[in-house]
Length: 363
Image (cartoon, rainbow, N blue to C red; front, side, top):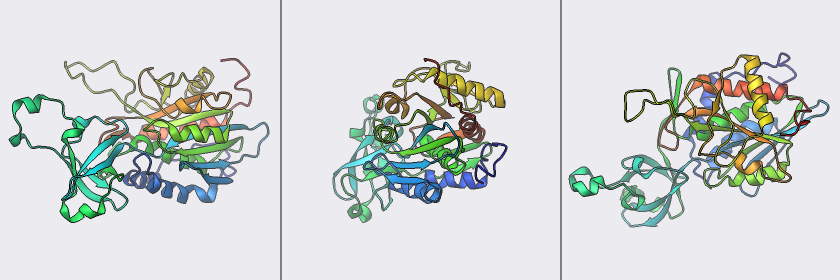
């Protein structure tokens, strides 16, 4: 459905087709610096829709969808294609390989996990000494990457080389109201951005950036924002939910960033960005007018592509909106379908009603 057909400005629907696309995106492997599998899916989806499309030197997909109204703002929306994972760094023969972590992963969760290595997706396991062969002192020491290896078995040893990425081998599932799989950070954002390109409002020029290397320093977004030179930017991501019971008592943990099921998380500030308060207020007003659930992500650690975008050129007013997810940066994370739907609806409605004089007042 085009915008012209969508007269009532109804948000795009998340139905079976969109969940299937998300499954394809999560099943694809795109550890930072080797995003080609996800890039191929995104290109398949957006190429027929773009007014202009290019793949830049770093591998970002940059899509322009030009509007037709007057006084159109140039609005950048970014979602990163890459995921955390591993890089093979040494061959110890017979299918045993040293590796290093790509992005933020806690080494304690790695032992015994299944991974896929390289573009041939060679099956492997992350191995460590079993409990039978360790003493008490060894078990009480924190597990480190130096004590782990990727084991492909000797039959596949020749298919792996130093520099290959390894991604977690986790199937995607929809379980009732929940979505479960690897790399929901940030395939949820990528899937949403595809839908926004598909349903681009006429009142803006939509500048969609499917970025690379976010997990290792927001590198793709820096280049994309410089190229687009937008007047404002929204970043779509997945943020950690911190809503489990406290580990040291029976009471619910009330110190959290976001809760599953409470709607899109609007950022006030994080490690890298103080969101533009005009955009924060506008998103809150939009959500309340549409009676959409939302939550304010508490300031703290973490960051998104906004950290690089807002410092480009002469400064770009930016804000991030995320779907909450449990256990992100692990082999499997969990999100709520309702949060994804409401996040997409909030951004779409914000775009369709975006006032051209939003920045007439100083921050």
